[in-house]
Length: 159
Length: 158
Image 1 (cartoon, chains in turn blue, yellow):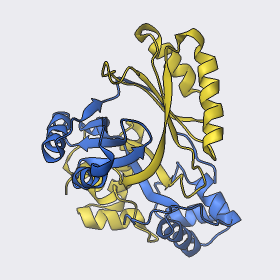
Image 2: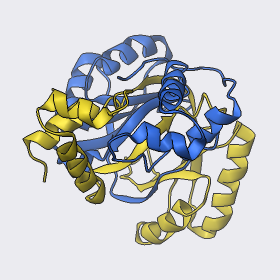
Image 3: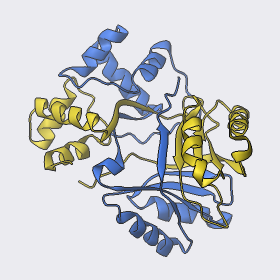
C-alpha cells in the first residue's frame, strides 16, 4: 500500500486535490464505506475519492494514507539521532543507515551534524542496539536525542 | 495495551489503508476477523492515542513547503517546559520537543520544527521564536533539510 514516489518539485494540484489534502489530514471515518462517506462531503463519488487519493500517492503528494501510529504508545522505542559524516563518505554512510529497518526517516541537514534520522524499534532497548549497529557499520558515533517531553505535534499542512 | 489482533491490524495498515470501497473489511480479511472488530479496535486505539490520527500524510516538499527548518535552542532547563509549550502553540511550529544536550558538541535542548514556503519565511519564523524567548535564548541555530534520504512510517515487523 505504501508508494515510494518522492516528489522533489512542487506539483500542480487542482482545487479538488487541495480540498482533499486539507480536509483529510485527520478524522477519516471508521465506517463501512469511508471513501463514500468522504465523497459526500466533497461532492465526489466513492470511486473518484479512491482514484484521487491513489493519484496523490502515486505523484508523491501524499507520503501515506491511513492511520498514523504513535510508536511509544505501542511499547516501542523512538529516538531522533544525529551523525557528523564527512562529505566524501556521506553516500556510503547514508546507504548503511537506510539499510536498517529501524530507520524511519532520514534527512540531510546543513550543519556539522549533517545526517538526522528517526529510529523506531519494537522495544525501548532496541534504540541503543540500533545505534550500536550503525556505529559498527559506519565507524561514526550516533548521537541519540530521544524526546524528554513533547509540547506539540500536528501541523496541518495547507495545500 | 495491544493484543495479537491489534498488532496484526497495525502491521496490515501501517503502510496505508487499502484503496478499496470497504477498506476495513479488506483489513479484517487479512488479519482474520470482522470489519466491525477492526473498526472497534481502531476506534479504541484512536481514543487511547495509539493512533494519532487517520488520514492523509502530505509530503510537505511536494506541497511547496521547501523551508522545513529544524530550529534548536539552548534554554535554561528549569524553564524548558514553560517555553516549549509557548513555542509549540505557534501556528508555524509542527513539532516541539525537549531533548538531551550532548555537550560540548551539541548545547541545544529545545527543538521546534518550523515550516514555510521558503527559507526566508522560515528565518522570519525563527526570529519570532527568538523574540518570544528573549533572554532565555542562550543560543540557537536553524538546520535546513537539504535532502530527504528516507521516509517511511513506523514499521512493526510482520
